[in-house]
Length: 362
Image (cartoon, rainbow, N blue to C red; front, side):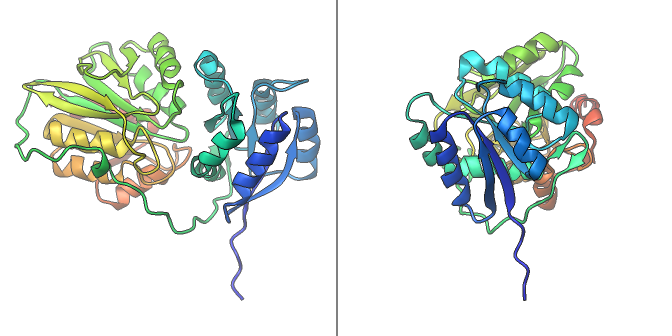
């Protein structure tokens, strides 16, 4: 008799009965996930956790009796469990969601104030992926149980977005371009890397898997912490020394070369590897436009987004690095990039800034 893989047990905490019901339906439609219970507020949730500890919690921000951020902080100090924040807060509340990531949440799901059931149902794949990623996350030194994944569904590649390659050889330029890709756990990992960059760092373009209306607040927060200028990328922005461009949520960001200078193109397009922005879209565009003038880094995250792009970067002569397993919240994306042969060197988070700067200083 073959043992069936244990399902990911999820506790849903939300004051809305409609959200609790819809989230239960969405999650239990996935054969790898089981909803062990729901709670209308953190006090009810605490009692449920005393009875049985879930693998993952989905947690609303705005709730009666205790807000989600306060509960998250208490939870992480007493019983660290992977948490996915689920909130109706959009751009105006992005700072609050950034606080949640700092407090230990591993991912964010946004929901509208109107039509929430339809929205959650429509985004069922992203919600289930977020829960699966959280189940694999290391939270405050606690290694969560790793669930087996079923056969991946067919996904679009970056070819669905990228223009046909020009076939022109990549000639050397005086400026280098650094591209970074991250997902689950990436907000704090990127902060650590970007804070270590000097004010005259080579231009950097970042794809962090994030919802719309979240990346602008993320860029603003990083700008207040870093020596470099950090901004959300806009279509046509030049890639400048001393500046970091964050790909906007809900848009693909690509690198283009005009003469000896580089610019970003920000545009709509289908989900690539279930993401928009996609790391593969950025990396493969950098391979085509910058070639050996580039440095690529793949960081913590679930899935394989960026693996093919890393290989193209390396084949084009770029220097390529991956964050190591010990310092990754989820080792999925770096592991896949390594398996594809696109990674030149595997390094811990604390060394990424130094290594990529040395690689760019040719």
